[in-house]
Length: 216
Image (cartoon, rainbow, N blue to C red; front, side, top):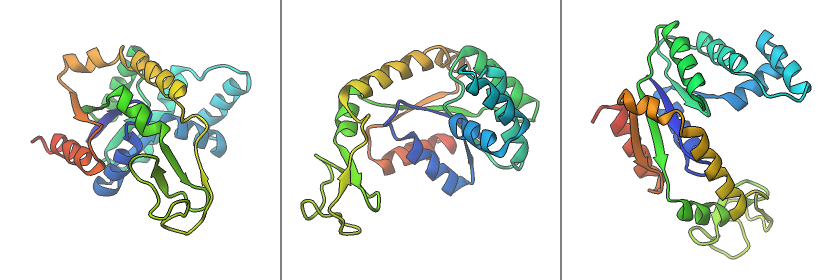
């Protein structure tokens, strides 16, 4: 099974992708991670991408498509793929069709985690973590049991991501809408798009996704 997972930053895509990897043996294809790995490994496409990036230019669709193809070729035929961050444009969506078809694969679902923007801002701007073990907390929803002391490791040092502020979150939301707007109608026309409530708790979101994958 091959799916595209959509949702703005903070919607929980990473969490749900990790669960699909663990529960179904699927492979998460995050273009950013793949690009960094290919550059580090010095693959032909990685070297090509490095030259482009070193010149201060954006990596082309051809290079990204090559990366996707390279990754799919390294996977077993029965391993499903989760596309994360790709495609972003109509041209990339068309390219993905060709990449999958040439490998005997088809796209099964496009799943979008829908969120309420104001609630998402509240969710993201309130989060912080233990500086030592990384345990996550939230100003409103999950404070340490003892104020100022990590529940897991007992550390008294905490940190927040510098980009977890309202202005940045709303900018990222606007970018997401602009980037997904061109591809959703393509997949809507094919009846592939399913939406889940990304504001529900993690277990409920997982259950919604499982229902889609099992055809319920």
